[in-house]
Length: 594
Image 1 (cartoon, rainbow, N blue to C red):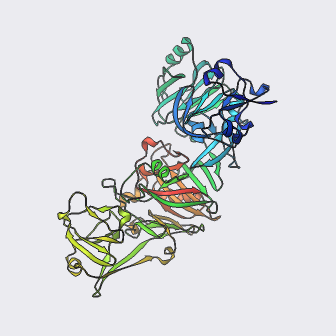
Image 2 (cartoon, rainbow, N blue to C red):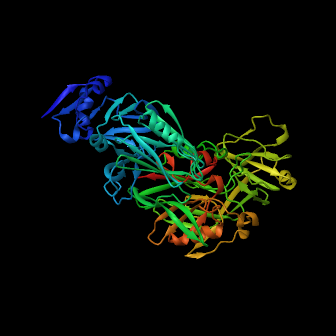
């Protein structure tokens, strides 16, 4: 029998242990009309102790877990309580397991190995939500939406024992399941557990001998539980099983998985060997018929600037993203091609590798050159060195409103020519400008002349000019979206790596570092790939990266900016590294769910 009841205050629900049905068992449309309400059912053994209540608010950005707050998106839709998947992993301690259906996500959370809990899943607003109602039902949680906060209270749990196995494993035995979170770190363990412990258990944990992989433990109380901290030789890896938490400290702790994250998006990770070394490889396999890609950059109003890839992706409301082209870290100017919907945000340089694509799922990679020429009314022609670029030499740089509202001189001694409606409107020395720079007309552009007196004499005020452009090779010309990187790694399944041809230094060509890349495969999939340090040493060289891309089935592949820039974003977080170690970037490739 189902009854509609007035919603009791949250403390009342907890204090009196009311039995409430899981949120997935009733209609939100009904609640929206008469909220605040909850639904009660005759209790069953599976639902004893559950309390799940809602208010008219159906979406928010804050999770309160046993009183401790964290920024995690949540939403209530179609009778389901959705928590962003990284909240389920990072705040609760669940492990996402491989799946084949993006609408169903098996998770390991204090269950026997091989017997996961399956959660409904959906993507909305760039996040993937997992319905936590089955967990609430199974483990007796109390759940309430309060304004923009989703409150979850879990039954109290006690730590029974804390022990070590060898030097690389920490095991915590519990009386029952409890939320557990592991802070991102490459050289320390910080584990926060929503459970209490007696003095003897804590003393035994602190007294346990330090090992080579995991140092001495400290235990401190925090709101809702305890925090364990220790030095660690490698990033810790956490799993839960029946009433037990296991933390491994291993260099090769990357768990392999293949997760259907959304229709047309599969998240994969595993170790891959290249030239005798194992590397952790993270990649998104995309079906271009079900998703779309767009260039994204720091700020839609300017090509200048840097930001964390997470910030850029969320600003553009992308579900996933990878860092893309090179840039100058000092002045934050782009150094390569970014073309969006046939508009040059930044032009290519040095005939370096680039990837182009269209809305029909066609992708092409080649070394890209933009041949731009300015022709004066008298027939004189002047080559344009680059468009909206931080790459400068003697010659002419062209800057449009995509660069930003104003142009500020990049080098000393520049002469700036303002062109409006195909006519020179003004010519002036950059040294005469104020700190605000020179406004870029929306119906024209700025020419920055650098050590080019001949052009300055030929372009007086009032001179009519024409600008012509040619994309080379012509096979890249039809693609409205282009992003530069380099060097090109694979063409037609053959390794074509030649860093010198694309004017990269020999040091760059041989450097071992984390890498980002994009590739296409024989089944028309697009791969966004990040490769990191080997457990035994540094990241891959370009040659090793090319070998990895071939093993992933690449027909064509292009290296993107790497090192600390190598970032792969998915649904609210970086999946390949801690955000603390990721540098700010200028541009990327964003993925949007259709």
